[in-house]
Image 1 (spheres, one colour):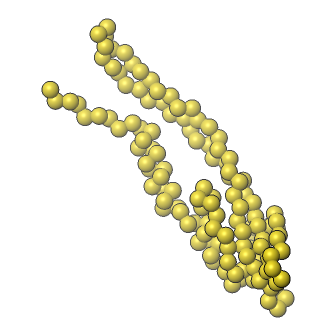
Image 2: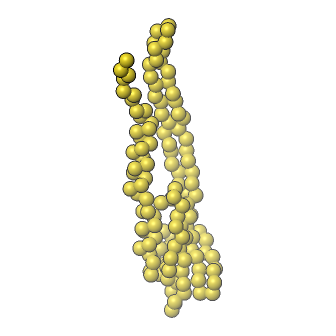
Image 3: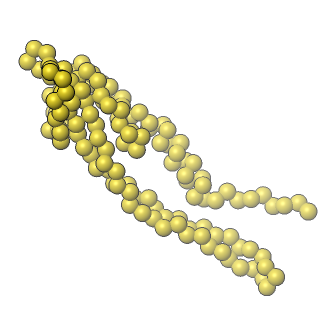
Length: 131
């Protein structure tokens, strides 16, 4: 008996597409942060406003941190298939509820004082969800 080809669930296809898009966008935040290295911290403030936290590190070194809350709505899905039983055909549905996902993202720049300015020397890699 030759079997019929299985149908790939639509949710699996969309998950794979979303994952591929995520990999294409990976390192976006890091690339932006990298562009500030060597610049005065004031240029970051002009683009993103005042920092949420400023930490004194060693003498002449500070960390400036911005927090951004990201909210993502993940839609639900519904799929089903018709199954044959002894008593006829029956439709079986599978539903996945949607949900809201919230993530606190922290973006931290390390600086060193030189002359009359604080200059960005490096940054802390954002978490994967915040890239």
